[in-house]
Length: 235
Image (cartoon, rainbow, N blue to C red):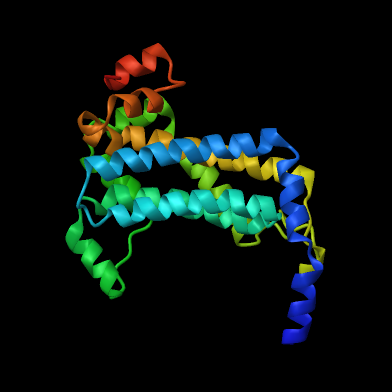
């Protein structure tokens, strides 16, 4: 593709109309905004409670990725939105590990090949995070995380050809109501997994330093029985 071809393709897409179409369905935007809000609350509470921890860069990446999901949904770039959804969750996983592994984080920052994957992080929490096994079982964290992550990875890597990519060329990028609905559903599910994972790990570690309003917000939607078993106060 020449530069002229690229320019023609990009200018052929009515990006403003794509966004306008997305906003014509307030329910979709409201769902995405609600998910972004809870992630923002988590980010604010963790930034305040874990102040000075270099691993907070992952929290900023998490929030940035979640916001980008809404942008990409509005532009009708659904496969790219899926990649941002997975990045959002991965950043949360990395923070949960590297906040207590500053030496490894420094090595990672130097680019010397250090790497830990999702399985390694979950194994770490199973072995070292107090009550993680019981709490994640109560909330169904691991099963939900593995199922969602696997589905997103298959989609992102093209294991299901054409999935979430209805257009054949750049110039054909336009909203697809069915894919948009599926993408928003996946976004909400991924944000819920992230929320439950934090409640099982870093949230429990730093809960006493969260604000009362933050605690109340993050406990919304949990049954009374689960709140009691989690032993997380709301004041």
